[in-house]
Each structure stands twice: as C-alpha cells, then as structure tokens.
Image (cartoon, rainbow, N blue to C red; front, side, top):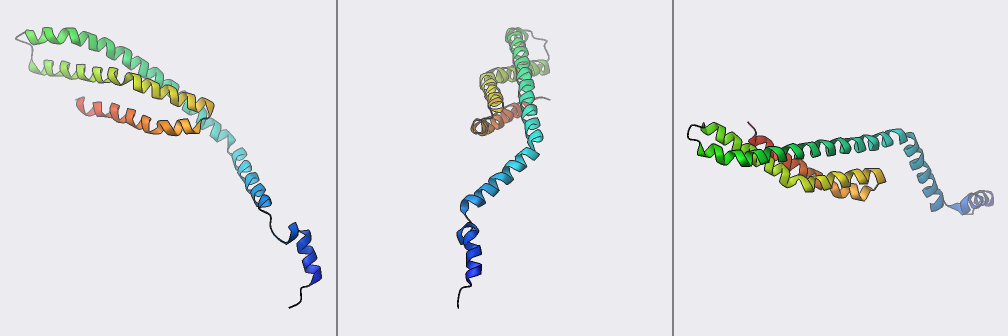
Length: 154
C-alpha cells in the first residue's frame, strides 16, 4: 500500500510522526501544578491547623505532666500514711493507688510523647513529609498509651 506523502509530511511536522514523552510529561506536570494551585488554600489551611493542633496538644501535655507530677508526689507521701491508718476505707486506698499508677504512667511516657509532638510540629513547619510519615506510628503509640489508662478510670 503506498504512503500518502501529504499525510506523512503532516505527521513529520507534528513531533516527527509520534508523541514525544517530554510533551506528555509536560502536560502531566502542568495538570498537577494546576490541581495544586486550585487546592493551595486547602493544603495550606490543613498545614496551619496541624501546626496549631500540635501546639495545643503540646501545651495540654505540658499541663498534664505538671499536674500529674504534683499529684504523684502527694500520693507518694499519702499512700504510706493511709495504709497505716486502720479505719481508712479500702475503696479509698484502692482509688489512691490507682491514681498514683495513672499519674506515674503519664510521667513515664512524657519524654517520648513530648519528643513526638515536637518532631511532628517541626515536620509540619518545614514541610518534611518523610519526617511526618515516620511519626505517624509514634502518634498511634502515644494514643494507645493514653487510651490504655482510660479503662482503669472508673
């Protein structure tokens, strides 16, 4: 079958008769850039909210650890005294012992929790996606640790 010279010249003039990879990639990059620009405000808002949330959680964590330390110190002094008093109801001793265990767990987990919150906040501020991914599991562990205390509270 003979080749029509007029059609082959039009093919040759349009990218040498084939679609160039660079043209496809450029189109894809332009599409991605357009989508990012269309959603820029939402992306930035999510980042801002994440930064504010980690700041709030960090402050709440600091407050919790501070008061857990105070409560733990008081309970460390009171528990031996309460155990020595014969008429102290067993339920009161049980509650005080449980409170001491909870406050101690909060204190024990505080360094790890604080580091995770600080690192997540830094990752959000620097846009370090790899750092954020690395701390996703750590945040789950912090949540599990805090959640494990809840069933003990009656």
